Image 1 (cartoon, one colour):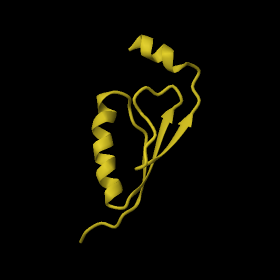
Image 2: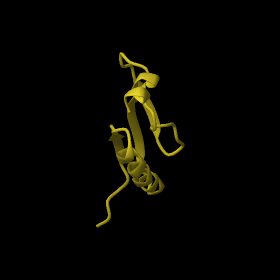
Image 3: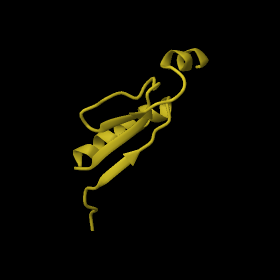
Length: 70
């Protein structure tokens, strides 16, 4: 039998993993799932969206420092 829509908690990794995951989350959202994405406040690619709720947490480094390291 088909699964019922549910709630998802997503803790993504920056980079291409996130870009691929966004497409999956869009499809899950269309199917009625409620999605919460948790990311650091120094995130680079992870952004807000209408398909999920974004929650951030503090880290001891800034986005600019991460971009320099990448």
